[in-house]
Length: 72
Image (cartoon, rainbow, N blue to C red; front, side, top):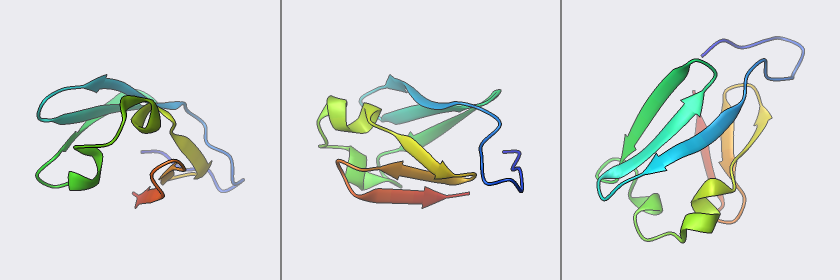
C-alpha cells in the first residue's frame, strides 16, 4: 500500500469478494486475500457488516459494525 502524509488515502478500499474461505480486499491497484483461518472475526459476520468498510487513516482499515481494525 502507498501512504500519503496528508492523512488522506490516495486510493479506494473495498471488499470485492467473499468466499467460503475468506474475503478479498481491493486496495488501490492491489488485491489482498484475508483467509478465515487467520482472520476468524469475519467468518460468521453478516455480509452487510463485512462490506461496511472504512479507511479513517491511510493504512488503517475499520469495520464499524464489527469493531474490527486492521493496520498495514
